[in-house]
Image (cartoon, rainbow, N blue to C red; front, side, top):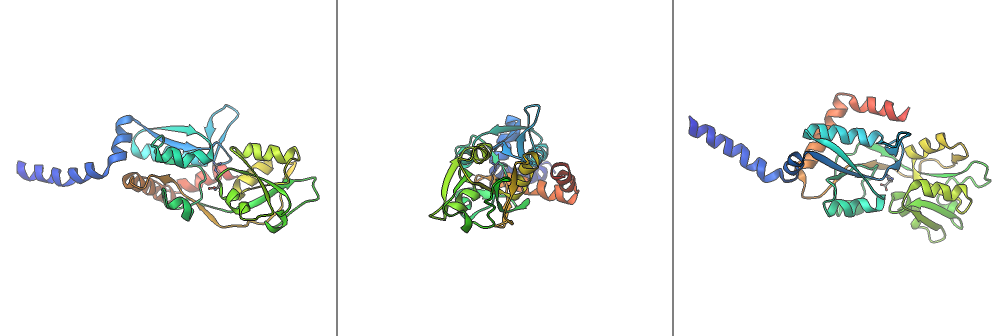
Length: 248
Ligand code: ARG
């Protein structure tokens, strides 16, 4: 009897230890390290109290809960996120990051958790109200470095692209009339324009993108916990209440 129990434990336990490398590490350290660029409302931004909050932060907290640990958010530039993940400064990226083939070569993405697309934002008082990327040729466009918006406009030779670490600075550039437009994700553009009525979204949604949570390729155990959590959030309609909390 004792022997069977022992064998059973061995059978279940050994594979668990073998494959839960990072999950085990997170549990024994006691916190889940999530990297993000806190300039992307309503996904991640700094509130009036100076706290980093948002839709992504709430999802990150749910994953931490599932892991049985605290959440620790590490703020950095968007462009620094993948390098920080690969050098193990963080466990995951939850930062409105679009799942792309290029990124997939270096990181692993969770199941998609949000749909978005690029839009063009300009000064409301401007005569220039572009509806397509083609209309941006000959103009100066401000973007966040390394984002899909940056990649899209950089395909056009005639567009002068100015790149910033933070979206907030890209908008300042347009407000100061040093740039003509910002290209960024639709939901964030909407949130920004609502708070800053001197700007408008001039184009329809120009791309179809899905956000995913990124982990290192070898961390399949963490990926499974993340996908389980996302599935649970959707099944228990916690996902929907988070949507109404942050997108209303
Ligand atoms: N979805 C875009 C991308 O993946 C922009 C994400 C920017 N996120 C942020 N937290 N600033 O490139």
